[in-house]
Length: 437
Image (tube, rainbow, N blue to C red; front, side, top):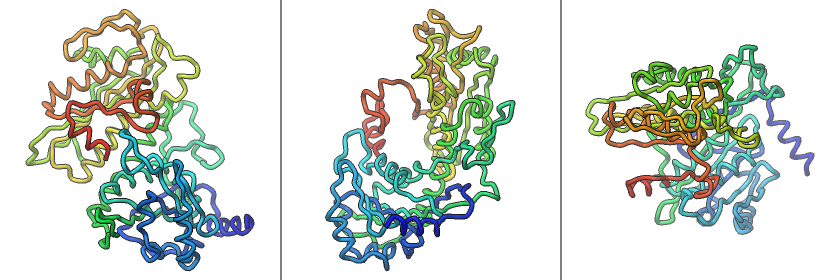
């Protein structure tokens, strides 16, 4: 049996091992033979039980019979997830967890990402089918996208992996010599009354999913890129590229200008680094807007902890401390591309929390942009300092009436809500409820 599977996968695999993954969202199920285009079907068990074979046969015939499909559904016992092969390893049925905690999106998005990562076959073309309620469609689509990051420097499969002597940034581009694999993402929508939706996704829905795919992969690429390729200069260039693409206004305040204009939080955190800190702003102001919304992101491109230095096990991975700013950049891009109707500003508080002669010391006092003074007890608590300047700028200069900040702020979050789900703090109950979706 294993030799048969290996033969099938060899037939599907491209001659060139250097592959990038393209994602395509389809408005309805397309007919494919899993022998040639593998399929992974994911859903909650209660939704899979609603499915009739006729609802999914386009993806399974002629390899899978109705009897096989129904028996497979009956054999699923997710704990927390479960999967069963319908035909060799190229047609797979998987169930996400039965239960949902108060911190978990009802779509079980974290489980969808893990299932896709573990069970796609990385061949020329394959399919992922999500069975879900309409309210979970967006979160489920985002979960699939997160399984396909762009950044890689592995020499085994990336001819662009060698970094130049001066550590110049190398962009991930689709080289003409590289092979592309295609993953089709399709949906079976379960209506509230338990029936299968008959209408295909509309073009506006597909446009939204396409733009959010680009935004998520942009965010992931920035977070995955190490600081020698994604320092403050590189991040500012990413912001400028998005500004050019969206035809939006951009403002960059850098280095000593931050100190002169009173941004004591950002300047104090980043002044010791070889590359100076920055406050970068993107602004989108459509006609007829009634509200002004500001998105503020913590962008610590690497966090040593400063003079309150992190231990050898805590410091690896701190390239991801710019995750808040990266996510804000992706969110801004997606919102503008999807014709957001209100004034929207994105504020990026960028710095490298480094060690050097100019580093902030415990007991130092900084004056923030708000005018408040702050005594530093722990230089590894830098995120709140840069965010304070960004949030104050949003309120004072941009006159935002809604402010949302995002940050990899504190390890206490993992204690409160675990490693899969972010912590949400807000003065609006409506926002807290909507954040699940």
